Length: 239
Image (tube, rainbow, N blue to C red; front, side, top):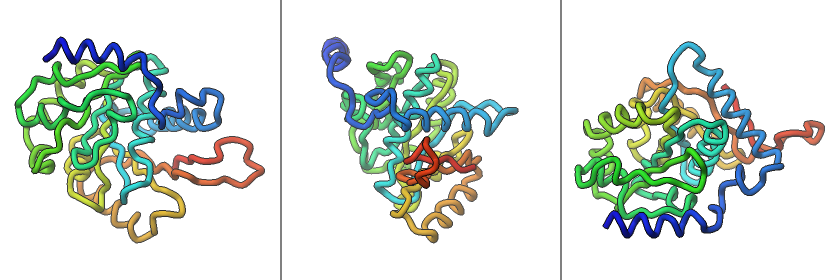
């Protein structure tokens, strides 16, 4: 089994870039500068505390959390960091599509104690960036995320990576994001401008506060700045 995965992985590493990785496909775009700014702001947000585990979530579906999580991982790897992205959205996983990896073995297998951690980690075509995909969709994601298995996993990968980015389901849909937020050093909330309403944002913030996480900031996705601002037209980071 492991041999077949390794052989197929080499083919995937040479395949085309994931369709949403703008930090790779548009290297001269202002968008990549926005992600670099986001990376810098994250580092400045907790200067006196170790920041290893970052949760990326949104209030409602379709606001761009998975795209932001993937591209944020790329810009950290471009800074020569050892980066691991975990797809903890076991209800609607997308990470394996973005990085062209397999999803036969992943987070759900580790938490169910079916596979070992090292058997689920996959290298990507980005130097220094590894991923753990969601694995098969389980019937009980919240129970798996609440288990001691996730604590053990995070403790282990903290020794191997500089930054661990976790992509979770939206806050207002299920309880998974709250569970994960409580286990991470900080959380970034993705808001799609013109899509999410104020009440949803307030409720999402209240849920994060209740989970006792540090809110690192908010990314305003699809935000259009006035024309006299020449840079960064589509993304904005607010602490």
